[in-house]
Length: 436
Image (cartoon, rainbow, N blue to C red; front, side, top):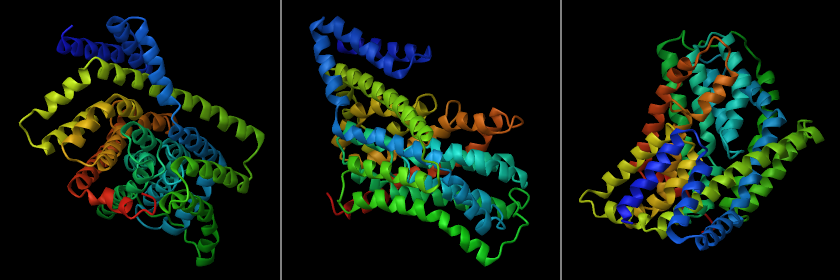
């Protein structure tokens, strides 16, 4: 069969099955299996099995269940209550202070856990009722939590970065450190936006009337010691070359258990629930890895991947135009698909292209993660939007949530543009790492 015709059939089947709501892991695995059977017969299935097993048994991917367990333990620890009390006492009287503090807490959670749901759920349950009670406009309150919660995939550690590093063969440690500055830039954009809007419209986010003495403010600062200690521990051992990312994930998981113990929440029930949740999430991710590996290897064996590369590289356009087009494709895909699925589906196709065009795959990986932050809050299927819908009061409708995130999507796009124009934002710190 002609390669062009085969490619059209494969991608038409992919779009059809995803449109029918079939999980992306089973869609990819099913298309790959049928394609290999039609192309090589039953003998090809052994090749498919070996590829899938080899990829899913990659030692680097052991970091994924460890970071998931770390996130689950932190979610159960009750740490968010103490952090919000710090924000309330120190920043509550400032216009927009509670929203700004919520963004900063989400950044702290992002630096402790590799997923976005921990900060989104915690702050949705703790900060949102407090802000609404004190007269904050619902769009600003909901939007700040939804957007800041997505920082979890950019500020390290990040499960998405682990997946990208394993797929693109890029150092996960450098990806982690490369996400620090862009993550801080995005956090700063959120904070500045909230402060400016609150200054222009005092009714949008009024300061709270309660006034606390200095002694009352100082006493709650102990609530930030454990989070900062855990952040320094996990990122420090990576930056100074003491541990690999996988080993750092084990250190972080142990540290998260220590935090839960310090808060009196480490019991058999919490441990059992955390392990069960970790197992379910990890199984979902690894099925996705298996399906994506099977699909991308089928594309390579059938020469579809080579045809795509040859076609794109033969275009008489600037490499930057191709890079921008890829980012637009990512943005569109992010409106409908899960970031992990997008990564596993597109990375084996796009990374060889951008490498041949002369771009740094580490920098491209940070661009991808920033783009996927938008995917977490972009309608209609942004993951954080549905988390917020399950948390917000009944009077807040889905359209309210959609409207609340629009300014923050623009800010995320601005951060993406800044990292594209100034690659040093993503590459400067990794170049200073002790471990190369």
